[in-house]
Picture 1 (cartoon, rainbow, N blue to C red):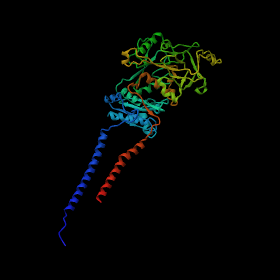
Picture 2: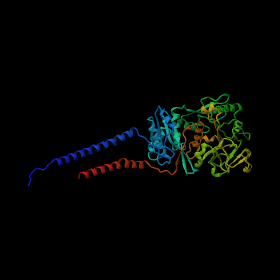
Picture 3: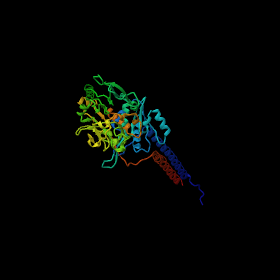
Picture 4: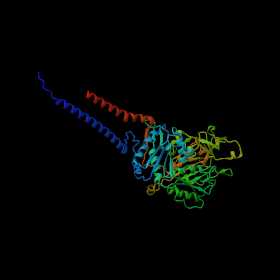
Length: 501
């Protein structure tokens, strides 16, 4: 029998191959981990979002991208929506894209339901006051800020062929607010005086202090101007407001305001019925407004529906909840929020006019020009009323620019006519159950062209879209970023041990 020693070289080669394979495995695993870390680091520093929605809901328009590229100061956006709001997901994703595009944009998300104490602190810090519940977001830069309400972010539509949808207008609202704060000078609302109008500085009855204080955080200044004996409206007036005059304007005074409008100005007229000697006086604006297809009638509105009355008298405080076809009233047509009025006159739009009706009294309402029964205390017969049923109480119109030059300068020439100045009453504005605050804000925004960015169209979103809470997103992220890589790692370890055996 041969006793020659066995050749150990094959065994050594096998051991060396195993060591090499083990080293390669370790190095490969280390490289894989380094690649994952590097990819996550690069994704954090240079992340990219894709928009796969059919309507490109989250793709920022070129107008917004241009504004963000030119931004040279810090802007903080406080999102004050509850996560349960239907529009929260869309707005939150959109704002994330704003922050991705500019280091100057900071987003602070505060849920009023889950972070009540922090929300109340912000209400005090941002001076939101009684309107805090209606504010969806606040955009702040330095000492200036502006508010964005829920109806600024979306408009529901129920007549589309694809079913109920939302017109998402959040990009228009946020980009417009950023431009207002960082580029535009404060808008100025010039309130006329000299005819017994409401005071821009006073509070309480016939005072606009609540209205002024509500506009100041939105980069709007309210000031008083004198129109008696004045030949020209000051150039700095973004809008002129004639609220509750107790004496008619003269022809010369109306011509001053007419020239202001024709030159590109915006005008708000809020008239109460003016009684003198048993008759209702004219305002002085009748001829001018008639050329635009708007009739301010010498009438008193009687609300004969007891359900609409806030008191006992049909000519005093009552509720209007029927909104017209004008663009500013679209958010209120579905909600039909109660608008409080007091001692109003009718404002009628003529057929064929470009003007739109704002809101009307109930089908049982009437407009009466003969006030004798009310002054003498005799019985009134509504069958002989001047107008019966759905008495219109306000109108608005946008005039075409007079020429190319004015159009390039953005001269819109907008006019709002209201049949009641008491819409601005402080108790009405401060009552959350009433729509006065929202209607006044919408009409002021229309006249001042706030956030009116024509280059940013609304996007549509299905009302039955899938909703994901922050907890849902956290759960999905945990599964994708932790469980899946861990499963792959365990599979790799199992394969390695299997090969060793």
